[in-house]
Picture 1 (cartoon, rainbow, N blue to C red):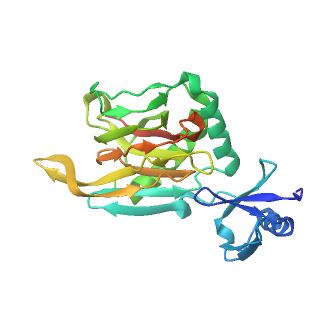
Picture 2 (cartoon, rainbow, N blue to C red):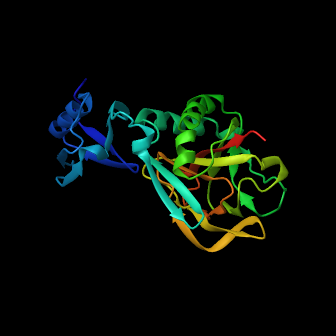
Picture 3 (cartoon, rainbow, N blue to C red):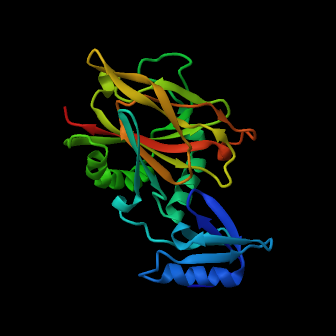
Amino acid sequence: MPVPSSSTLLLRGGHRWDCAAADAQAVLAYLANPHPDQHKIFSLRGADGQTLTVPAREIVGVLDGGQVVAEAPIPPVAAMCKKAELPGSPYLLVDEFLSASESAWVLAYALSQEPSFIDAKVTDSANDYRKAKVLYDLKPIVDLFLPRVRAMAPEALRTLDLQPVNIKTIECQLTAHGEGDYFKRHNDNGSKDTAQRYLSYVYYFNRAPAGFSGGMLRMYETVVENGFYTMGKTFQDIKPRNNCLVMFPSHCPHEVTPVSCPSGQFADWRFTVNGWVVREA
């Protein structure tokens, strides 16, 4: 594995650290070890003379000249999932869902398809309820995501205390939110056409550092009234962290809060690969 003269470390949560060459060599050796010490701590000298102390498990890759030259292996799904819960609205967080090179490729693909994005709509054609751009013709993305989502669906259902189901299909789209974009409160299976959606997933990715703020996934408490799921009073905001996947039951109410993107450039928008595991009727 080549030793770069200067390197940028990729850290969990989409953070980066410009690292001195000697310390980069130590990180490269660590990543090349098939059985690395997960409890190791690095003290890494930065280009500005400051030192970053970080657990080795927080390092996910190394860039040299803008190219990924090393990346940490992706751990099993069971080790990646973190469950959180509002009353009746559980969700899973999976940090570093893709490898560093895969995440970079997804962003490059999204940017290359800018002319093909169209205005997003909702199933009941309501006005002023959603503002975003979507891409539906995305076979390379589908080929990357659907096998992984299908493979982790049974475990995700168990963790979320959902009954196992026979999967009919998995839907997928690519969504981009720019300045002032939003999606008001809704659930993902509230119409006749979407009634069989069972498990929702959202994968976040963006250019680093992020050129936007806002765009929180706001998860609401779910309560049952008169035999129907409805929204409670409490909510929790989930920050759209780069290379993070969120999964939750499709009946749970949620929204996307307004996005601020001062540059207005498409490359600075908030991007997601999102979709739904659809059960057989």
